Length: 231
Image: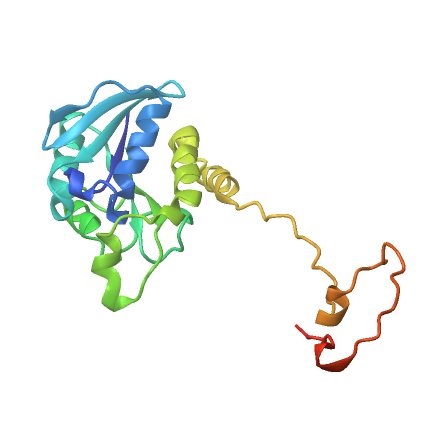
């Protein structure tokens, strides 16, 4: 059995926050694999799914970010899940938006969810780092607790869908294959380049390419003579 954990803060006011991308990813996995109903247990929302024939528990701690480890430890102990079979998905400031990296162990990078999880289950669990970009030190709190912008949906929706579809690769240990699938899913298709119009002077633009018919010449006279106006 595997345990997939998404980090985030409970409550509708936080649901669209960048800090909650871990919750969003777990929800995408639940949708893709027709997970069972969410149950409130172990200070968390807990569901169960079968992914590529393997039983997987899906966990969204409801203790707020800085106490995420409480429910992770409780569920791991209750179901006898080793740290090596635990996968945590969380927001990563030090990765550009849409970039994803998978690793085992390492520091917490200042992430309060990991700060809570590490002391309770150790460092040998797998981490899926979901890039949200770094706004600069003075803007971090506003950035992570702010909602994703509309422009972010261009990469966020495809990323979450791809996580749901391809999470089985991580369960099988194919981390590189998983990252490649996500990179392909979020690669922007460049718009076809349009040829720039040939530059012309304002005088040439004002002239018809071919006059429709020859007009008789009229000689202007007196103060009623027509003046030529340039654009």
